[in-house]
Length: 314
Image (cartoon, rainbow, N blue to C red; front, top):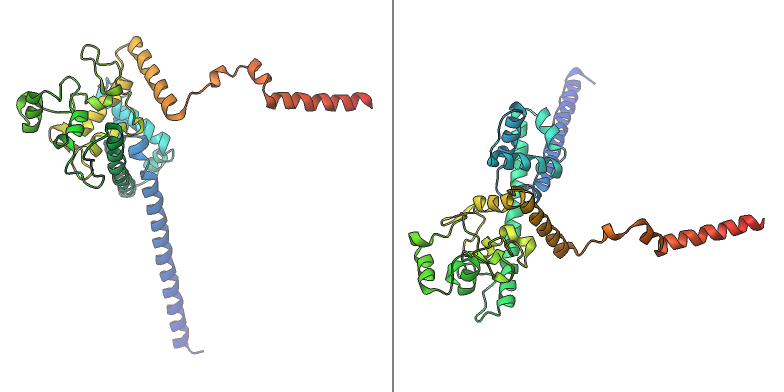
């Protein structure tokens, strides 16, 4: 084989190697993208509903640098969010510490993509599900169309009543007209609890905590406004209502109780939620004495007695 042929073969081998490396890099990149996007789907469901991941990371960095600093409620909320992020994605803290800036940015973009896709999927499902539930629960005539969002919000009498602030009476024509016309006296914002978050849609203006957060669709609480409204895609606001602040108000209700008495009521409410979603838990009632009389323990005792009887007969 002459020298030219050898050089050609070496060049072809080098090209095949370079091609294989390119394909390998693309495959690795695709795997990382798929992994980060799939992991990102959990963020809005388990960590924070609206807050950007970058804000959580920045707040954690601030806390690490200012261990003796006084944090406000918003900062504490962000820090709690970062802690929940590390629980949902246990590997993320180590990745952020070891990655270069560009690599971290790329990872966060993919996580955000997964989170946004999950929100879109959830809204597509809830749009029809909530409409069906409202039709059934309120026995509407005509029915709310599950595929149409333009005839919801305050355009619909039923949706309007559910979204109406608890301290106002939707049946009052003056209030209803004020909401429709968006007058200054009737601004529907995130600073008002809507009627649908109250048990049996009944709010006591002198005791606004009674029945709060005891609605039927517990699992849909955080996103319930959107399926009832007439906005057609995932946004952080709707008119005068800022969903991000509204969500923060819900979180603060549970996490920033003014004292032990209020915290006790929150704990009871959380127990009520757990019971409604998962059924009553009787683990605390399963004392050793009770367990000892159950069939698993009884079977173990019987088997041991038979084993001892055989041993004694020998």
